Structures are given as structure tokens and as C-alpha cells.
Image 1 (cartoon, rainbow, N blue to C red):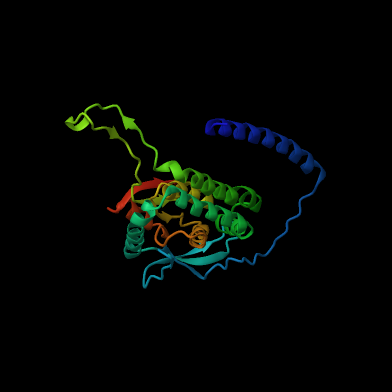
Image 2: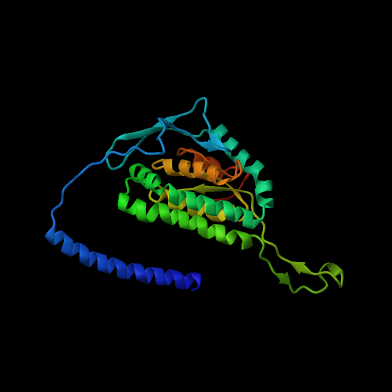
Length: 280
């Protein structure tokens, strides 16, 4: 199947599945009663009391700066205090990405792809904790975070990892005879990475949006500073930890937190491309 055929096949299959499930759910509702239960969650990923930006190879502790409390939408309970990135922190993150860019871009696409694939496998391995963290942080049902959101994010990283070997190596020879005035000269195009990219994510699909932005950017040899939604920032930080475990070089993927980081990224002179999902 071509990608488009796969998309149509997936959508058609999903539509049939939804129709079947909706019918089954109607029968279940008619023959069952609803009971409300609660559960407690002790994650293998401990949620820190203060969530901080991730720069280069670890969490960055700002000396000063504003903070805000992050609450679970489903319960209203406080999850953590989030330290908002100030201008110095954003500059440090962009500088880390800029310094990491030459070596990452010079790495072969196959090498970059292997790291993205390892990250995808680790995300699947940690799904039991990631999906619960996503559910608590974003207020999404666990049935969706466990079977859709986290695993689809892993699939996206794996997909772009598979494309990395050819992503920046495809080009074409141009039919420009005697280019440059020399009879033996010829012209061609070559795809090259841009440099530092900024990704700004939305609250409702935290892992997936992160994978959709970081996956293609890193596969093509770019580095990234990612700003998750201030409403659901926690899983992006865990993705940064997983990238480190997968062998991603320091500075290739950075995370800055807080509402004010977005405008600072979009106006930064060293950011070469911006991918934005959300509202203005």
C-alpha cells in the first residue's frame, strides 16, 4: 500500500470498528449498571514536586523566575509546581540545540534512525507508566492514553526513524546544460537540515504532538527546542529522559516550560523553523 492507501484503509477500518463498537456499547448499556470506582497510582516515573525545563542532558534549575501550579483536570488535585522558563533559560536551550546541530546533522541518517527507533521501543516499554501520567496530566481517559496516544507517539518516532536514512539524501540532477558556462559542469539539488527548530505543542495529545514535531525534525538532522502546553507539560519531559536513554546526543532535544516560552522561541534569531499546534 502507498501511504495514502494505508491512510484510507486505516480510516475505513476505523469507521467500521467504531460502528461495530457503538452497536456493542448500546447493548452493553442496556444490560449493565454503572459503578464509579477510584484508583491510586504509584508511578515508576516519580512526579517531582517542581517540574523544570530540560536543557542539553538534564533538568535545569533556574535561580529565579515565575512558577505556577499544575492541576489534574479530572480531579482538581495539584500534580506539581512548574517552573516557567525565562529568557535566559530559553536562550540556553536554543544555544544547546545550536551547538549540538553540526554533529547531529553530520551523522548518517541511518544512525539517527536507529536512535529514533530505540526511543520508540522504550516508549512502548514504558507505556504502562507513560499512559497513566498522560491521563493524570491531560485529563484523558486511560483507555485512550494506553491504547492510542502513547503507542501512536511511539509509532510516529519509529516511522520517521525508518525514513531518516533517505530524508536528507534525496535530490535530483537538474537539466541545465553548460551551467556556469562550462561544458562539463552539471547542477543538482540536495536536501539539507535547517538547524534549530522550535516545536510548540497543544494540551490534548501531548505525546503524539511531541512525536509529530520532533520525529521529522530529528530524522532530517535538525535539533529541537520543544515547548509543551503549559496545561500538560509532564510527558514531554519524560520523552526527553527516554531520548537520553536511547542515546540521543546532548542538546539535540530540549524542553522549555511555561506560556511565555512560546513567544520567545518564535522571535529567536537562531530558530530556523517553527512548528505550532494550538490557539493564539
